[in-house]
Length: 156
Image (cartoon, rainbow, N blue to C red; front, top):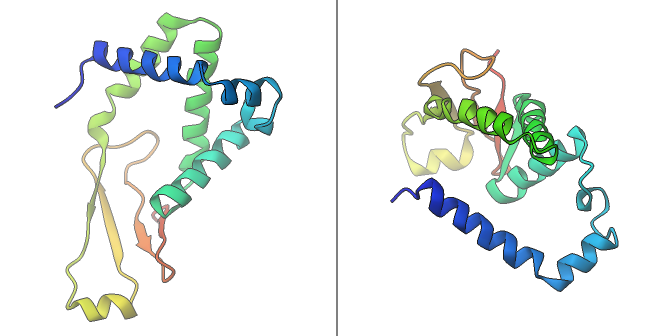
């Protein structure tokens, strides 16, 4: 069941209330315990590093297709618009991004001969995009590496 925009905003407000009233987080932010990630003055490389770490640790995926800078710039643009109070511009940017949600990549995994073969060989995956993504005509290919990580690379 898809949540309505109003219920999503209500949930966001609830999360914000929990985090803003958590004394440990308040102390950590006020005293700069988070280092560069604790302040509002974000740099593109910081956002890229954070997203790369998140993808690696949470999704076992190494992003190697050059998309991290593009995503980081987009996030920083949204953050700057919000920070400056440019809410109409922020809503426009969000609407533009939401129109692109139908451009999700589709992954087609080639059939394998047996489960035993999958342990000894690296399986490649082809990505097909239902419609072109920003600045690209093809979605990046995915490859399973021997160590179990999924790597996203540019098509050559």
